[in-house]
Length: 408
Image (cartoon, rainbow, N blue to C red; front, side):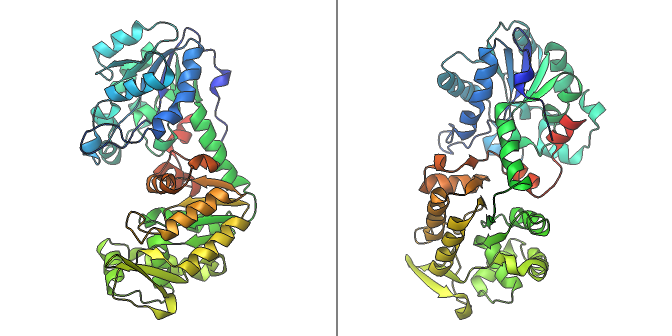
């Protein structure tokens, strides 16, 4: 869908409310930001608006009720932004109360103010969104919106990573004032849009990892609508596909899958194999690590009495060839338990192949990006999405509340 660009906005002297996603991993020992990727990705829009003399008010979240150890204030985020931008970034430990409103009213041209964590407000946490279904009209009456909307002239959203959240900060302001997409949101929609609408062929999707709901939610659409010419499965996604194909993986792996309530995806995998089996690649061999030693087994030599932790060398070589010959490559989920010595071979070689291919490459998802950063320079990948859940839902063809709000 077409969303207005910030290039079309006259922001000089206007109060601009900018919603970003700078939700960052924290070091569990120090509580300090451990990965600045999302902060870095937000800089282009912040710098652009401030350089054009907008009176910039930034709102963002950190952590959640389901992620309580990361639910902290944004003071350190403001400090990191100031260093990276090379200009002051004000901060106030208030979200939409009297102190925050006073600071907003006092902003001068080109000044930047970051308000505190949106998720200190009940109406912004994910459990509220899940349990209390607000209409768009009701969202306009929430504490955040009724306090901030009268003070600002323009709303800009640059938070693709939160596009699947229907919170007031994401979906309410568009109905009340001129609104536009920031640089990052535009870039995300453009990259993922090309992946969906007009991928260079052959289009190869590599789906792995432990979060199998992501892989299976995408697989049906990309195969059914012809978005993918090939789907290469690995990780627990690949193991479930093997179970659906009648392979006995062995008691440890079967129990691992059952204990995480992932057996429910076996029936989904069976349907996919019946409908699109010729376009789905299953692992031909697998690996275990015992006593620090890696051992590989062809699938026809299973089951084994050890937990499967990686794809084997034959599978790796086959997938490398498909990635090298592709026109488009999308990756979600590492092939193995790459944090474990001996279980990292498939993940390392996959990322080396993705970085080397001439194909257009798109990756996304927290663990996906973290594993890529471990093995390759991710600047060699065409698009590294900041989105996890939002990216998966978009590729899977599910509605995103943020885009619906812009379309109203």
